[in-house]
Length: 199
View 1 (cartoon, rainbow, N blue to C red):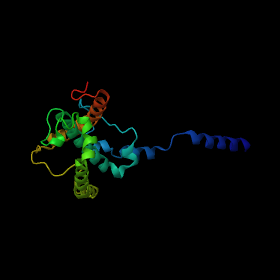
View 2: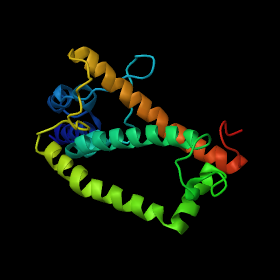
View 3: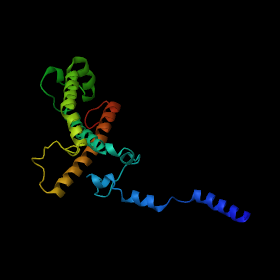
View 4: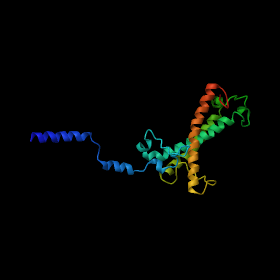
């Protein structure tokens, strides 16, 4: 009798170190991945790119749409920033305040324009855009009325779904590249003190 009790307790202790039942694994395996729900899980070579090292899409699954909205917005802003940073080394808008004499290098524009006032207007207009456009669009996205990043500006978009998804993938890849590029441009111009090509 003692032997049977000892064997039973050893078997019970050993089961603590075994894997969990397979039923819980199958429920996880059948759960759809965020990479299957959204366009953009491809890299520049067209291969699968499922980058989520912190598992944010699993930990914060209700916010995945907001994450995509933020990625698209930051990517679009970065694409404009790259073009603007490079263009202002060659051309400026009219006005003495924006001339090459007043602002010799693009990197100095922020500090000079904060002191002289126009940056306050920029802050105002961006804030107004966020209040009137961004906040309602996030609410509509959360309610399922629109997709992340979709503002309905699809007049020139391809009518074919595959071609449209290809354009969306291109936008994501270009935005991701631009986010890296603007950081590199800003860093290089501060370190070297030179404008384009920042060497």
